[in-house]
Structure formats: structure tokens, C-alpha cells
Length: 135
Ligand code: 5GP
Ligand code: ZN
Image (spheres, rainbow, N blue to C red):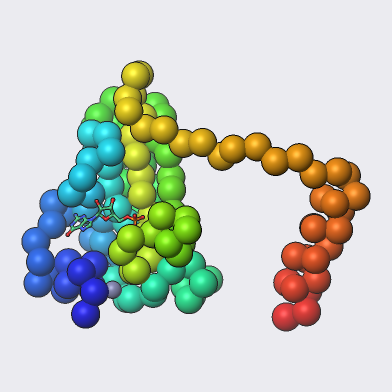
């Protein structure tokens, strides 16, 4: 059983913030900033590619985000979700990070830059849309 499944079952302790039948939110042990929280479905999904698209994870995510805003008096949050090792996923149980942002915190997010022509963007969008429309 994975470590987040064990947390969801209460076999490993966590600093719990929110719980309902399907979801659990708890503090990330390594706090990127004060209040850094993870939201997980209690059911195991490796990552976004195996996630049931019908689960309503935005309910706990928004609930926790609003609670962080009020309780910590912050107005900025990054919502981050890593899928696969190249994307930085280290725990293979789907989770969403909420990272409150503060003036001069140490968080660094860099999307980098790429340049595509209009034609390339059109072709790219069509390739992806075709996959969706073939379903
Ligand atoms: P990922 O890199 O997979 O997106 O994020 C995994 C996160 O889980 C990391 O930020 C890491 O600090 C956190 N983490 C790993 N093990 C534990 C644990 O046992 N308890 C808690 N609360 N967080 C953990
Ligand atoms: Zn799991």
C-alpha cells in the first residue's frame, strides 16, 4: 500500500486539515511555505492519467484554499499537481498541492519559453482535439 493510502486509512499520522468520505487534506511534511497542503482522493489513483474524471476534487481544494486564505491571511496560492517523474511526481498517489505565497518566499516556478508559429499552434491544437473528439 502506498504512503498516502496509509495516511488516508489512518495507519500513518498526518496533520489533518479537512476530511470527507472521499478526500483528505493534510499538511505537506516539507512545507514549501507555511500552510503548504496536500489534497488527496482516499482511493488510490497513481496520477492524472488513471484518475476518474468525474471525481469532484475541486470541492475540497477550494474549501481548503479559502480556509488557508482566511486563517493565514494570505491572498496568493499556487495550486500544483505533478504527474510522472519528469513532472516532479515523487509519490505515486494523485495529489494536489496548495502552496500559499508570501512576499519574498523561496518558491521558484519557471515555465521556460518556447516559440511556435501560428501554423504549428494550429496543427498542435488539432492533433490534441482530434484525440478528444475520437472518444
Ligand atoms: P510530489 O513531488 O509527488 O508532487 O509531492 C509529494 C509531496 O509529499 C512532497 O512535497 C513531500 O514533501 C510530501 N510527503 C512525502 N512523504 C510524506 C509524508 O509521509 N507525509 C506528508 N504529510 N507529506 C509527505
Ligand atoms: Zn495510494
